[in-house]
Amino acid sequence: MTAAQQMQEQLFPAPIKSVEKGSAAERAGVRPGDVLLRVNGQAVTDVLAYRHLLSQGAATLEIARPKEAPRVMTGVPGTAQDHHRLMLPTPPSLDDTFTFTVEWEDPGLDFEEVLFDGIKKCANKCDFCYVHQMPRGFRKSLYIMDDDYRLSFLYGSFVTLTNLTEGDINRILDENLSPLYVSVHTANQDLRQDLMKWWKLKVKDPQAVQIRGMIERLESIDLYTQIVLVPGRNDREHLDDTVEYLSSRPNVISAAVVPIGLTGHRTNLPDVRTFSREEAQDTLARLNVWRRQFLQERGTRFVFPSDELYLLAGESLPTEEEYEGFPMLENGVGMIRDFLTEGLPELPAALPQPTRVILGTGTLFAESLDRAVEPLRAIGGLMLEVRAVENKTFGKVTTVAGLLTGRCFRHAVKPGEADLLIVPPTTLRYGTELMLDDVSLGELRAELKMDVRAGGATLGELARVILQGAQSSGHQWGMSAHAVKDTAQA
Image (tube, rainbow, N blue to C red; front, side, top):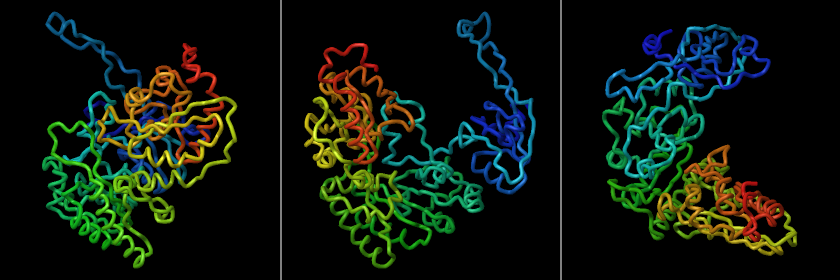
């Protein structure tokens, strides 16, 4: 099939990452590197559509085996472009295809990506958009303004709904893509438009920007919502109105309230600021009135302030029970309480050798972490310091631990001043030892001449990392760092 035919059919070839051993796909001869073209003669846009078609019973899958792409010369000989001529690959041919059929059986395919047609982009230009505040030089994926309802269903990412088409809405309802996670910010339509500033040319359906209408249209879909608060804009009375509206909708399960996040890179952006302690306290006081009322009337607190609000206000965190199972943990709601829930393990009286350990964290969490690890300081030979690391990448206004980078730790820690540096696990790309700026833990070990490890997701895990690192790293790093040379990569 030619590229032109593929475009006309809107075909989205899905590269296959792996094939389950003994599966129908393996029996049919499917191999990693093949691509899925169609299911039951239909083009497939994503893994959700793929699963939906399989759920209907018998399914015929059309597979293509890409041929090696020929290379073609670009540029025009004998012209000014001649010295730029390059041999570039052409799109692979997908003519070599075959089919196989399954009946009520998983074919056994795992794909390279869950979205075959690409990520749906954001239609907004929010005053508080974090992508617009990103410094230059990071990997391209961090600059993608995604707003894809499919990722919301699959992974719990928040979407605004403003870029939905009528077809998207019908698909959500027909396939029951529930729950979804929705950024509401305010139920006041004029205020929401002022905060989010959607691009008319990017809005495919004018009804999609009407947040109340969308919530009511999706009445069969459970919605977890969030409100990003901007001081003086959508807080105070506007916040009360938004909470009141959201709580009136049966399909809205809960609402998270998160203060605006800022970086030091806001050139040519609206003038906004973070919350003062007094404003954070006022916000919590308002929300606590609602939380008590909802708990009495509905058996749930419904609205959940983020950890950052409590830290900004200087107030104690709620108990574990008050988070009601931590439904929006990834949104910063209850992360600290969840971290503290697992207590410290049994601690040794002393270490085999003296060891200096630095716990690096964001300036917002440092004081709380310092209190939490205080019992560890009773261990003989353990010199433990919690270091509040200023964010040199995003600016000192960025205080959360998860946005610290390798550059931040290079500035905050001197080579050889400790045996072990522990960084928050949230600073690492999932499944890797790479930070946001692509600095690896191995690079930090070599440059700082000490062991560098990721901490744990709970206080108990963190303690075990400290003890394990202290017992295995003491003689190789830090205290004897002047003798460490090439072994720094060990």
